[in-house]
Length: 356
Image 1 (cartoon, rainbow, N blue to C red):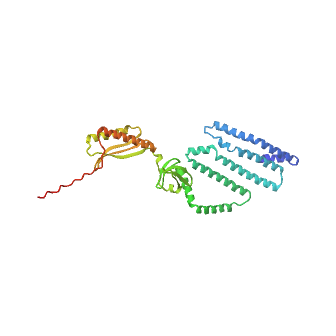
Image 2 (image 1 turned 60 degrees about the horizontal axis):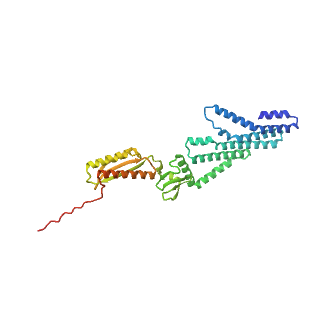
Image 3 (image 1 turned 180 degrees about the vertical axis):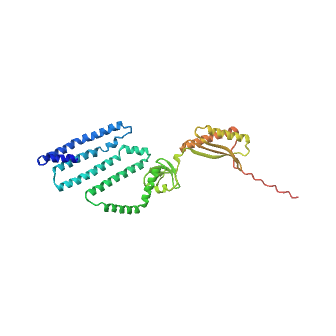
């Protein structure tokens, strides 16, 4: 650009009438060629992308299209004004304005890049929570805008050191005044990044149990089974044990089957074997752990322990599987003629001695 400016100035030196004409031609050249230059750059990028083995997303470059076109136009205006040689005061003003616009265009391009498809692809690749990804995008945008504002203030000739120091003191005062709010925000970031639960999960904590309806940076809203909506600050959830029932791989069933004390050994053995085989052949029972054993002698019963897991974790389906297994157990007991034990206690009285 300096070579072009020098060439035009040399060509029209001594010819004051030609200077405005040269400036106008330069402006028109940049005005009509900005589209050509932009299309050429993107065509070149497309060709490189098609020949490259690695996938290059053109939306990354399309985000820069509008800032680049405006930059070329402003560059043409700046060179045209330089050719006019309006004098030291005006030239300094135009130089400062040009630098400010360059900062604006760079910030504009970076701002658009945060909305481009590659950032969304990266968030999916690293499995970022949508809430956390949105927060990071907003944070990057805020940093870009803040840096652009600081650089513009510097170009205007102001000392930003005191301004930044004042912001630091003000930020410290705000942080001290909003400790609880900041603690909830940081706890929300930890929860979103660690992902112990997501919206729609059934969780239980020492404070509340229910389904997560909304997860934000300050609080989490949980709908209890009584349909009450509980808002829990994130710092409480971050410091408590959270059980996520939705993410269970299987669901446990454990109970003792009590049969009558007078049950014969052969019938008891057949009952235990048939119940074990029933669980092993049931498609809804997880085959990894199935325990059915005659465990102990109770006060009024013989104890058979049943310990197994259902494949489903949904509560309604889990109850349906348990019901089906219970009916099958009753059928086995009826076939074998085995009755369930009833709590009973025998009391013996000594007969009074006969006195002659």
